[in-house]
Image 1 (spheres, rainbow, N blue to C red):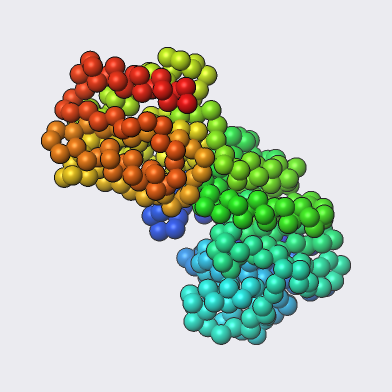
Image 2: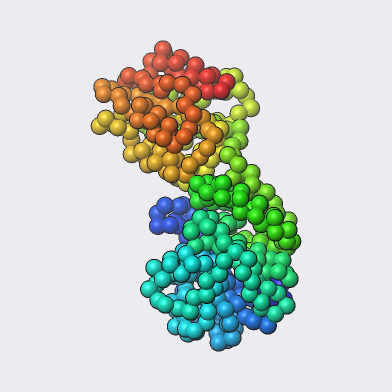
Amino acid sequence: MFFKINDFVKWVGKIDWDLTKFHGEEYSVSRGSSYNSYLIEDEKTVLIDTVWEPFSKEFVQNLEKVIDLDKIDYIVANHGEIDHSGALPDLMEKIPNVPIYCTQNAVDSIKGHYHKDWNFNVVKTGDILDIGKNTLVFIEARMLHWPDTMMTYMSGEDILFSNDAFGQHFASEQMYNDLVADQDELFAEAIKYYANILTPFSKLVINKIKELQGMKVPVNMILPSHGIIWRDNPMQIVEKYLEWADNYKENQITLLYDTMWNGTKRLAETIAKGIKSVDEEVTVKLMNTGKKDKNDVLTEVFKSKTIGVGSPTINQTVLHSVAGILDMIKSLKFRDKNAIAYGTYGWSGESTKIIKEELEKAKFSIIDEPLLVKWNPDEESLKKAFDLGIKISKK
Ligand code: FEO
């Protein structure tokens, strides 16, 4: 299967409708994904990226139907992660001497994965590969999101092969953004992708986009390595990235909690009532971290100006789903957000202190001392929870 993007470029990747988890079990996928590989046929023939290893043989067989493999002059590996380099071993068995253009760090990652010494050609930002009517310009994008990542700009057709950046885990036969019927679905996947993968690198995202803007080159299309192609107003996703990278927040407060006998849940519900009592406009979401998908929870944290994190105390600590989400929150390096801790206990009562400390380590501004309630909340405790909601709202 392939489809023609323009007179020079064909998509030769794989749509993965069945994918439910990515990065092992770390990233949930609810709308499938794709591994986008692109074939450029100019005076020279170039393959940009491949697909994930389970689809390797299918990819090579498919590619053989599209083109005589011996006609491929160059391979560009924008990124060494296995979802894009996974078909290289099978492909290189057929065309072992074809040069692979990639960064020095990609040589390291690709060799590290496959332990093969292929014909690597190291490139840096600004290096150019003349392929006929068009030229390819390489742009290193270190830590977006691996040290090896780069983008490739095809001048002539003004196409940016952006790799993971601007991608989404979104399977669609309608491969262009303007053909996606439900734009909310598309952007929900794009923001989830940003929140869960790119947030720690937001400063680099801004710098890289400014660098790209500084090149003052037209961008007719953005062809990422996952999901749909940005054909209609491609800069809209670039604008979104600039917004998301700039300590993004909406008028939203999210109350995370896990609960054993619903005491901490009642606190969350009452805090929410307190918030809404003084602010009708703010979006308040309650999320049970023991039940909700962790990546959806993190996406809601990304969208929030303030979060609350609640847990009862168990064995002198917090429930495991709260511990896990706090660790993920810390690793994603969210900035410029407020937080509060709350929870119930029966005897030792360490949970809220632990939550507060973890939130401080994650660089959240703590609005107030934790709300710690013994046993099941009574009227007085619920009043404190309601008042805390008011305080959060007014912050
Ligand atoms: Fe889609 Fe970083 O690989």
